[in-house]
Amino acid sequence: MNLLRTMVTNATLLFVLGACTPKTIAPASYTINVRGQIPGDIVEQVDSVLAERVPLIMHQLSASRMPVVEVNLWQDRGEFLEEFGEPAPSVRGFINRDAWQVHVLYLGVPPGLSTLHEYIHLITVAANEADQFTPIWLWESIAIFESKRPPPPGLDRLRCISPDHVPTLQSLNTHPTNIYRVGNLLFEFLLDEWSYDIAAKLIKNGGDIYAVLGISETTFEQLWLDYIISNYDVSMLQSEPENRC
Ligand SMILES: [Zn+2]
Image (cartoon, rainbow, N blue to C red; front, top):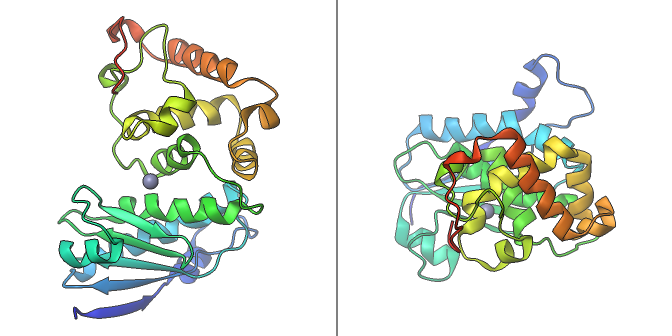
């Protein structure tokens, strides 16, 4: 058994010291378990990213209450995958939503933002009071936008977007990887055109565009395309979009 160390967060202290933060935002509440030989400064990097970012994201998504989250940082890939439960070599992080756990594999680069990505999935669960199913396009786009993990590619590298086409939300729910490429751009559009309050309402309504925004998914997708055309140089985009981003 590897070294198991539990570190009680100092998020409360950091929160008190942070200037200009509204009092209504509660500090994040989590523990960090180090599973293996992971340098102390790496653990501190994770702690400081979570302490700084989690409280505001919880507030923005109206997740006012959450159980204490158990963050597990793994050094050994085999043990990490054993915890995951299946051989999936490309998996770098996952959550156990019933146990309020985050699991992240440390691969030599500071994993703070990757940990934040997984943590945001649990914030989404907490914000979803009615326990609605959250569609993948919404579930992942929030986490990718806030954490910038995986790093969002430039628009010119998104092969599934053309000057007259964006992927449908439905296709993003079923394609295995496209949402990881376009999720940042999708959530950026949602926030620019609407707000975090609307994002929180979408979570509470299972991503139902019509129920929350009063427009069809097709109109929403057209507005996303209009947003891209208005805000980015689309002349670099290929005219024939590909299925895979
Ligand atoms: Zn994710």
